[in-house]
Structure formats: structure tokens, C-alpha cells
Image (cartoon, rainbow, N blue to C red; front, side):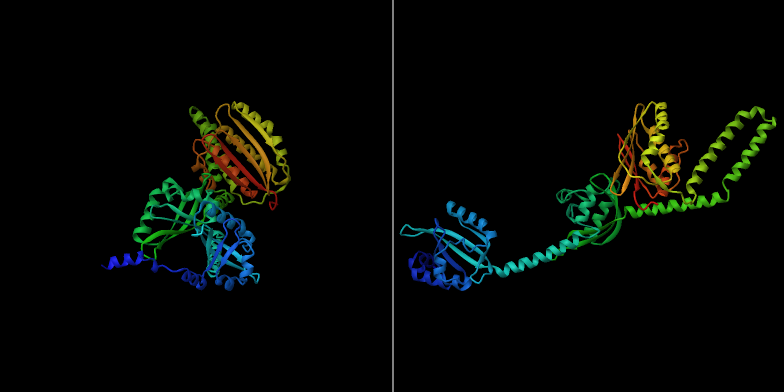
Length: 486
């Protein structure tokens, strides 16, 4: 019965506002109500709240288009939305700035709807609401957000987050620049895509600890950049708790690139070892026993009593001499000496060596090509740089296959002169690691000693050797500073 009464009430036309009541509603509404002509866009009716809020008189409104007071920067956008809605007879809303009579602009949100009157005339009813306060709050929030993003993106550390599926959900600018991926690519990756394969099991454990045990932790992790470089990170990871359900929603990671720091630590270890060997060299603690053994072998060899063993004596003497040469190479690198640096033309040093290098290549059925660019003179020790070039080129000729080519090039980039030797051989990563941190030589091959000497010469020239090696090509880049190496 109660429902029937409600239906009767809805069907009773007297329950709807009369024309006079509609007028009272419009004239007492806080929102601004206007009616415009759909063809000219001129005002046909404005409610009193328009005059109160905007400051214009009724006559001033009725003599202009509804677009006249729209901010010039917003006018085209509002016009397109309004005309489109009129043509398609659809409703909609738009936010824009509108000029008040006092010259200031007010943010409005306007919604509209076409109508058709009983007498056949049509129009557009627009209802506008003052959203100035909301816009000011939004702008203030945006400023705070921009400030926070600026802080995050100007950090020298990586900052990123990941979810319970190890999917990356955010990365700051430092992480983007260091890895070489853009933000879209990173957000399509997981921690397992970023970490080197050897550490996937370790990553899985860290993931479990963060979400299940809810504990923070610090650890080191190798990640892969887009160009296949491996970057060592020192990581601090902290679970993020959802405020509403107290569940761990994501993990926040703050990471520092310590690749260079670790390289310097290894270099310090190497220098310490060099110093130790240098100390031994100064006291002849290595060569004196060898000299004694060689002397006794020579006496036995010449005595005649052991003539039938002469072949063995000769072999032992040769091996001792070979050992002494290797030790001399070690000691030469270990000496803590100041080298004489003078301005030299690196290109000319290479040209002078070219006939010798070419002959070495021909003997191994290989070729050498020069691509020497325009470079300035730099401070070098000519004798040591000649040794570096000879060792490096010979090493790469030995590593190249029969018929291979070794290219020697120079160029000038910024504050660096770069010497590059490119071949079709390869060099094992573990060999490079050992060369960087200690004296290393294979028992069956002396070529690693050649590289060791190259590294040592480069270090004394405050130069850096970069190696890019893959299955088809190996590049050794020696980077000399054009300033500050004197």
C-alpha cells in the first residue's frame, strides 16, 4: 500500500515543480545557471548567481557570447567541446578559467545539456560551479608532488619499487640512466630480468624475506644494464605496508652503484701486492737464489763428469733464464718509480712501430690496418708506450684466427685521446679480472703477462683500459687524458 502511494505520487503531475518554482530554484541556486542559443552561443538567460560571482550585469551578459570571457588559452578547447556536444546532442562537462569583471580569472566546472521547449524553441542549459578552491588545492598538491619527484629524480642513488611478483613498479631517473632502459621497459621487467642469472636464487630468497618475514635487509647484487654491462649495487630494501589492510604491498629499494669503488679496492690490493714484490726486488730475495742455482748448474755442466746429462743441463739453464725473464717483467712492473713524461705524438709512435708490427702479423698469416685520427700531442713516456703497443698488438695477433685482421685506431673525444686495438679474437673475463687485481700468468702461455704490462704502463700514465669482448670481436681501448697527466 505504501509503494502504491509512492507510485501515485510520482504519477501526480502536481508533485513536480511549476514554472514559477523552477524560476525560484534557478534564481536561488548557488551554482551559476545560464541558457545559450545553440547557433550563436549568445546568452539567453543568466541566473542571479552569475552576476553575484562574476560581477557583470544582466545586460552585459546578454550582449555577448558565452566564449567571450573564457581564458584565451582555454577558449579553443572549450569551444570544440561545446560545439561538438551541441551537434551530437550529448551532455558533458569541462573545466576552464573565466574572466571576472574585476580582471581576475576564476576556475569553473561547467556541465551542459540540450533542451527543446514546448513552443519548439531549443537551447543549451549550462550549469557552472566555482572550483577555484579545489584547483588551488590541486595545484598545491601538484607542487608538492613535483618537488618530491624532483628530489627522487635528482638522487645520486637508484630508487625503485617492486611488487610481490618481483615486478618493477617504479624507478627514478638515476636507475633509468644507469641501466639504459626507459621507464616503460623497466616496468615490464622483474627483478630476475635485472639481476645476473647467477644470483637468481639469491634474489628469490630476498623476495621471500621481504614479503613473508617482513624484514628489511642490506646486501650486494649484480644487475645487467641494457648494454650488457654488469653493475654492482649495494642495496637497502624495506617492505612498504599498506595503510588500509596492513599487508606488504611493495618493497622500496635504495641502491648505490659501487662498481667503481670495488674496482678501486681491487686496484689497491694489486698495488699492495706490487709494493710487496718491489720490496722483495730491492733485496734481491728472488734473483739471488736463482743466480746461485744457475752458477752451480754451469759448473756441473762444464765439469765433464756429467757430460751425458748435458742436454738436461741446457734445458734447466734455459728454463732458469726464462724464469728470470718472467721475474724481471714482474719486478719491472712492481717498481714504485716516477716515469719521465714528455709531450709526444701517439700517431707517430704507432707509425714508427708499424713495419715491425706488420712483419709480426705476416709471420702469423694475419694483417694489420691503421686508422689514425687527428689527435693532439699528450704527455707520454715514449719507451713505455712503445712497449704497451707492441705487447697489446702481439697479444691480439696471437688471439686472432688465421687470416684475421687487427685494427689500430686513434681518436680524440672530449678530454681523452683513445688508442683502440680491435681483433676477431676473445679474452676470458676471468683473465681480465685477474689482470686488474694481481700479477697473473698462465703456466703454459706468456700472453697474459703482455697484458699485465699493458695495464701497468697505462696505470703509470693515469690512463684506463676498457675491454669489450664478445664471440666475434674484442676491443681494447686505452684512454689517455689530454690534461692533467703531466
